[in-house]
Length: 316
Image (cartoon, rainbow, N blue to C red; front, side, top):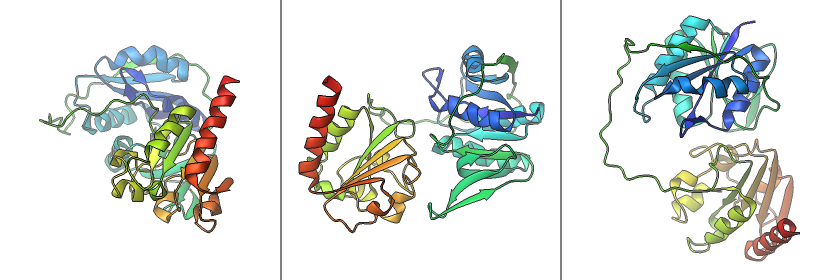
């Protein structure tokens, strides 16, 4: 059985939550194998073996985390060593860039926005902003960018045999970046892409001060907090909270859209969510066309009641 490589993203030295799902996807196509890059990358072999990695290709080094070139070099070296049938990367901007660069280097087929994988190496993708769902295959090594919460199950634990990669001689430059950027604001909420529940607010909130209602709802549910482009453009919240075609693409188990009309750009970034709940006072907005549950009403009356009901249920 051929190997299927998974580019492992880490946070504080540990694999991110999506890694287990990516190994489950790899197991559909072959034997999962991990590619991990960074300082003390080799130390992750044991944990990755428990998640299903038969082999762990590790490139140890103090690389600049803001560059994807080391990941591309490590993936290319692992492809040369393993001769895999496919490579799976995440759906974040860095992973997508690394996957696309790898596809060019190895002459493979880059497949983005993948929401399903079959045993015969066919992938299901969302295309044209989510307007169409297509099934496709690719020549050469398939490089698959997988949306989170698309594959169920898990891969069986494996040996996690360590294979060290030396990418010091790779022709891709590993330049350092000098930056004066301030540190990102820490948050205890889950990230948009990893969250099981996402709460998003739109222009219907009316102001930045009133957007705080979404923060309360998200914290009550233990959810990630998102927003429509209209809310971001109006200054209600930061750009990194934007969900949609020009923001973050999410596929949570539960997506709650509050005061969002449902422009096509927003729907493209969230319509693959398992369950969609929409709250809006206008019964004719497009978001209700894809919602599993819709509440027509004043959000400033509905949401506080929703929050109170959740609190009662949690304490109950």
